[in-house]
Length: 299
Picture 1 (cartoon, helix red, strand yellow):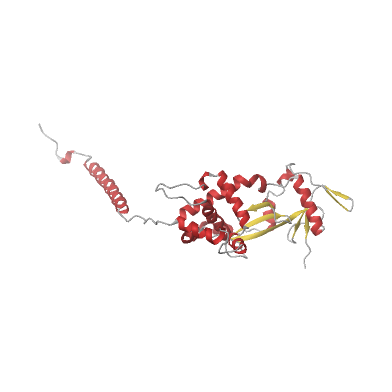
Picture 2: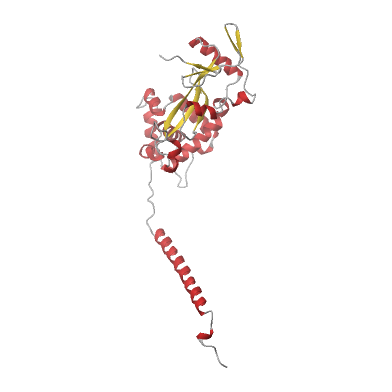
């Protein structure tokens, strides 16, 4: 029986190509495996055994004992709210949210107290500092501080949105009218509206073009807000991209959405015997000449 020679195999070159391809594939997976093995052999991140109990004692002695180290004025300056209001918020959140309640970790050590967690969240909101800013003071890691901020914001929205994050009712409008007329002699005034630019220090590079205005030269986010005489914010509109000012933000704002869809509460008032169907907002000179705007005189 005669076997064919190599020259009788027409597919020999294809076979060599397939073998080379298999070797390349094998070499690729070997290199990936070696890289993963090298990464796994790197030293692990060192665990920091923070003394959260001692940190809680320092925090309590600084602000919350009978004779604290810092007075109420210092507390308000650093937390941006009165101590009584802070403690009320802490109590409400602790009573309704299990994550803020004291417990024990897997090692049997006490967890952070509600005051520690709320202090971390409030200080981040008040100062804009990163989550690890208070590691040394509160003995709290960056991850835990970030979780405190997230859970705190969710809890505040859940607890207080029905009362504080809403549109004014007819009763609220009557009270606002009375307060503004008594203090400013402006019957029918709902509040003042204005916009402000807030610098976005850590704006991602890919978003800078959408949030930089020519005259400011750095990324900012514009905020439109309406406030009454007691500094109660009844409306806020935040985060519109683009080169914005008060006018083009107003054109996209939902401020008058309830008026256009017919769900706005009744808010008539009288001036010199003349009847007006809705109130007005006090604005500066850049706003358009609409019937709902009264421009403040410039001095």
